[in-house]
Image 1 (cartoon, rainbow over the protein chains, first blue to last red):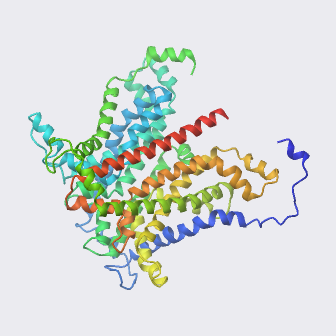
Image 2: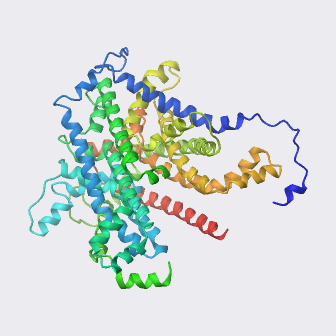
Length: 298
Length: 281
C-alpha cells in the first residue's frame, strides 16, 4: 500500500478507454438478452391477452378485455380458486411442518454441524422434480406402498391418487425444504438470551414462543410463506401428475391453451397475466406489511 | 455468548422433546420417495409392490435405451451451454450493477431478478409467443425451435441465479482491492481478471452449479421452446410417466439422484473451503 505513493503515477498519457465503455461492456449483454427474451415476450403476452380466441398464425388484433371476462365464468373461476386453495394450504402445511424442524436445527444442533444437518434435509430438493412426483405416484397409487403398509396394519385402504390430497402431499413435499431453509436463516439469528430471560422471569414455553420467537422470526415466516405461495401458484408438475383430471389449476390451464388440445393463445395469455398479477400482489403485500427494515435489506 | 448465559440455558430454557422426534419424522418424509425409487430400481418385478429378488436388469435396460440417453445428452448440452453463457453475462451484470449508478438502474435490476419470482409457466409461454411471432418470422426462418432456442431461454433464468449469488459475494468484498490494483498501474481489464475474478470465483462456481441443476430439472420452459422432436430428459421422463412407467425410470432416478448428490457435495466442499480461507485471512 505504501509503495504506490513512492512510485510515479503510471502512464497517465496512454489513451484511457472512454468512460462509457466499461459500464456498457458490463451491462449491455445481459440487458439485451433480458430485453429480447424477457421484456419483449412479456409485453407480447399482454398484447395477446387482449385478443379473443387467437390461434397460432392468425393476425393479432387487440380488441378488448374479453379474455379477462372469460376468467370470471363459472367454468374457470373454480380453477383460480383451486390454485389459491392448493397454494395457501401448502403454505400453511409447510409452515406447520417446517417450523419445528428449523427451530430444532437452529437451537439444538451444535453450531458446526448445523449446516450439514440442514443441507442433508434439503438434499432431495436437488433431485428431479418430475421423478419426485413420480415417486409419490408409486407410494400413493391404489396398490402402492402406502396401501400395502395400511393393509399390513389391518387398516382400510386410502384412494387418494388423482385427488386433491395427493396434490397437497406432493406440493408440501416439494416446497418444505425452501420453507425450512428460510425459517432456519431467521431462527439462527434469534437472540437466545431473550428466551432464557423469559424463562427466568417465569414465562411458560408457549408464552416465550408466541411473545419472543414468533415476533423475532416474523420476517423469515413472511418471506418463507411468500416464497412457498408464489412457487405453489406456478406449480405445474404436482397437480398434473398427482391430481388427475379433477385438479385443474391455473398453471395446467395455461399449459393446455398452448401445448394441449384447446389451442387458444389469447385466453392462455390472459391466464398467464393473471398468474403474474397474483404473484405480484403477494410480493407487494410482503413489502407493505412485512417487516419494512428487513424487507428493504433483502 | 458468555459462560453465564450458557449456564442459564441448561438450567432454564429447553425445547419440548417432541421436536426432536418430529424433526426425525420429517427427515423420513423427505427421504421416503427416494428410498422407494431405489427399492424398486433393484426389484425383480415389473408390477409387484412386494420384493421379488435383486436385479440389475433395470439399470441395463436404461443403459441400452437410446432415447433416454439421447435426451440425457441433450439436457447436459443445454445446461452446459446455458450455464457457460449465463456465467459470463451474469457475472458482468452483477459487477456492473454493483459498480454504477445510472438512470433506470432500479428498473434494470428488477427485470434482471424477475425470473427468480415469476412462475416458470409464464416465462415459458412468453418465450414461445416471442419465438413464434417475432424471432422466427423476422429471422427469415434462420432461427428454428430446437436446442438453440432452449439454450437461449435457459440463459435467462440461469443469468438471474448466477448474478444473485455473485452479487452477495461482491457486497462482502473489500471495495479497495480493485482500486489498489488500478493505483498500482493495472489496466481495468487486468484488475478485473487478476484481482476481482479470483475473489468472485467461488461464488461464480456455486451459482453455476445451482443454475446447472435448475436447467437440468426444467420441464416447462424446455417443452415450450423445443421443436423438431428434440427432447430433453425432463420432457422424455414426463412423456413416460404419462404413458405408464417401466422400472428403468427408477434406475434412472437413482443414477440422477446420486449424480446430483455428488455435484451438491462438491459445491458444498468448495463453499466450505473458501469460508475456511476467509476466516484465515
